[in-house]
Amino acid sequence: MASQVTSVISRPLPLFAAATILRVAMLLYGLWQDANSPLKYTDIDYLVFTDAARFTFSTTAGSPYTRETYRYTPLLAWLLYPTTRQGAFWFSFGKALFAAADLLAGYLIILVLQGPYVRMSADRACKYASIWLLNPMVATISTRGSSEGLLGVLVMALLWAVLEKRVALAGVLLGLGVHFKIYPFIYAPAIVWWMDAERMGRRTETKDRKGKEVQRPGVLDSVLAFVTPERITLALVSLATFLGLNLIMYALYGMPFITHTFLHHVSRIDHRHNFSPYNILLYLTSAYPSSAPLRIESVAFLPQLLLSTVLIPLAGAKEDLPTTMLAQTFAFVTFNKVCTSQYFLWYMVFLPLYLPNSSLLRSPRLGLVALALWVATQGLWLQQAYNLEFLGLSTFVPGLWAASLAFFLVNCWILGIIVGDMGRSPELQIKKQS
Image (cartoon, rainbow, N blue to C red; front, side, top):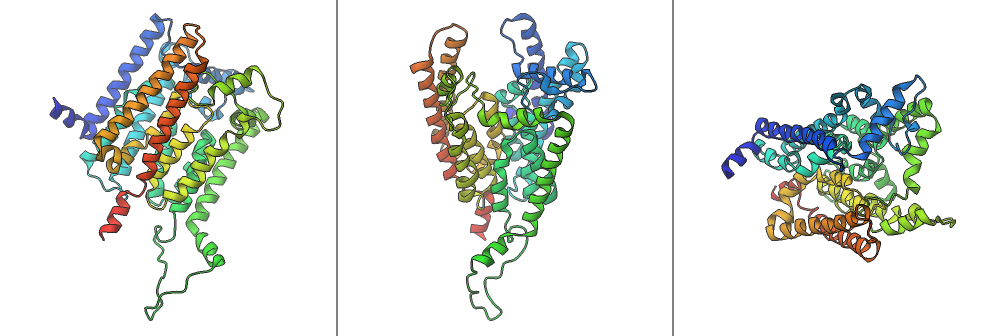
C-alpha cells in the first residue's frame, strides 16, 4: 500500500491526476450537499462573487459594487462572467476555476523545487508538492468557492520569477498580486533585500589589485550600492502595474472601487468566522461604535506590519527567501485582526518549499506536536463557534475568547520555529560546503 502511494505522489502524471480527481469528487459532492442539506457546501463568499458578476454584466453601466459586501477587485467578477449564464454547470464555473488554480500553483511549486535555488530531483519535488496538491483542506476551500487558489498562483509565480531572476516579470506579478489582494505587498521588502548585487550576478570587490582589503564603504556609498538596476526595475514595473490597473478600475467604477477594494480593510470589524484574538473586541465595537480618533480596528495592523514587512525580512530574506516569505505570511495571518480558514492557504502554499529543511521534519515528534496543537486549538474554536452560531449558546467569554487566544499562542510558537529555520536554505548549505 505504501509503495503504491509513493508511486502516485512521486510522478507528475499520477500526482496531478489524483489531485484533479480529488477536486472533481468534491465539486460533485458539493452539488449534492447544496441540493440535499440545510448546511450548504458552497461558501457564502462565492455567492457574493457570482452576484457581483451578474451585476457587472447586467447592464452596460453595471458595477460589481452594487452587490453589498463585495470587497474585491473587479477582475474577479470579470473572471466569473460564465457564472452569469443559467444552470448549475455554469454556476460552478468559478469553483472549477479556483480548483484549477490549485493545480497550477502545485505545478509552480514543482518548478521552484527543481529550479536552481533548491535543485531537487523530480520525484522528490512531486512528493513535497503533494502536500499542497493532495491536501483536503486546500481542495475543500477552493471547491467551496474561495478564490484563494488564484492568489496561490500569483504568489508562487512571483517567487519563481524572482528566483529565476526574471525581474520585469516579477514586477508585473507583484503589482498584479497587490491589486488583486492587498497582502502580497509584504513580500516587496523581502524580495528587494534578497535582490542584492552579488546574488543578481554583479561582483562586489572586497580586495584591490594588490590583494589588500578594500576600505569599508561609507553611508552614501552603501546607499548607492543598494540602488541596483534590478531593484529599480522591480520597483518601477510593480508600481506601474499596480497604478495602471487601479487607474483603469477607477475610471470604470469610480470611488466605490477605492472604498471597497482598499479603504474598507483599514476599518473593517468583521467578527464572524474570525479566529483572531481581536474577535470579541471587534464584536463589541460593532455593537457599540467608538468615537475615539484611534480605534482598535485601525491600529491593530501595526504589530502585524512591523513583523511581516520589517523584522522578518531583515532577519531572513538574504539567507532564505522562500522560508522568509512563509514566515511573513504566517505572521501576517496570525496577527491579522480578521483571520479565517481561507487565509491559511496563503501560507500553506509555501509549506512544500519550507519542510524539506525544516525542524518539523528533522524532528518528527516536534512536527507532530505542532500539527496536533494547530488542529486541536482550531477545532476547539470551531466547537465554540458552532455552539454560538448554530445552537444559540452564548460562548463569547470565556469559551470563544479563550479558544482564540489558545490558537493565537500556538501559531506564535510555530512562527518562532519557522523563523529559527530561516538560515537552513539549500542555497546557504551549498555556500557553506563550497
